[in-house]
Image 1: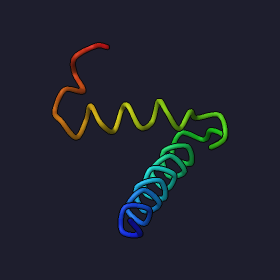
Image 2: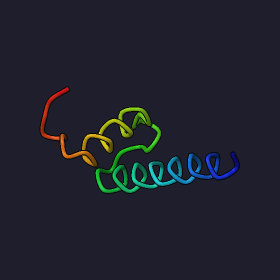
Image 3: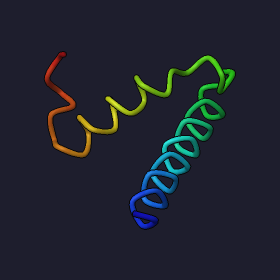
Length: 54
């Protein structure tokens, strides 16, 4: 049970870090980037389907 919670927290932190780095590179406010959209993009990229439109 505790390992599952820690896993979710680690993934959330990693996505937040990626969002912060991407927003800094694009000179955007990190709060303007949707966490859910970032998650979907990461999922598509990780599964190799990022080039297929939703």
